[in-house]
Length: 253
Ligand code: PEP
Image (cartoon, rainbow, N blue to C red; front, side, top):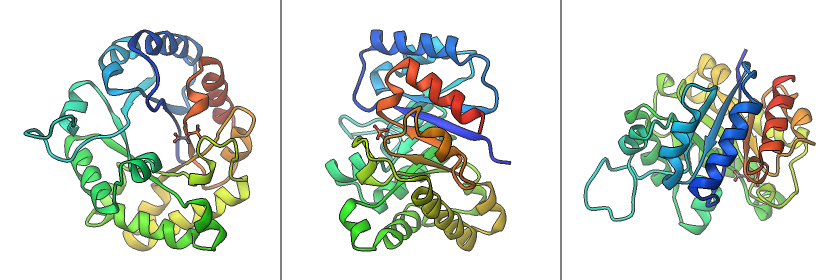
């Protein structure tokens, strides 16, 4: 049985004060949840303060990106060991906003995943098709390209420390969620790709989150799907009330 994992991607939102207000409410509201892994991913500048606020709670810390080199002349970048230094356990890699706005390639995503694993971080690897790709029946080709590109050169053992987030680009921040059936179809496809490339155990163990306009209203029907193991949540993770509700609703499915 795979444990569900709900992660909040705060994107470029919240000052340190605002971040602390939110996590204080989350630690109180979620303190009794045991059957779901709960992760918050603030901006880099809030990581240290958020860590101090959640230390000892059931909420874990994640970052939204990293650079693959460990240190050196890379102005403006943050490395995997630096994220470990702020007590991050997870890191989102290859989010569609990074692929689109910052032109991240599969090769770069792959290097980032390897750097994260080397430092002992658990990567949440985002994959997903754009609207025109879905409309042109290219969804499975795109997912295959993202999954194979991201995981190139990794082993079955590495897969035990990776989470994949299926995030159809057309559903991110749009209010247009994939139906549970649409999401399940792609999740099952991803699990099959992992099984084929890394073996039955790796496929069975892999946790696959759904992301794209997840709310307290749709989480239960998504979570009830056999291959959906939680959610990567943007907008609805920015308010304590909706994130708490969302985690609790996913925990009961
Ligand atoms: C995301 O940022 O990964 C995301 C899924 O955003 P939203 O929930 O706002 O669609």
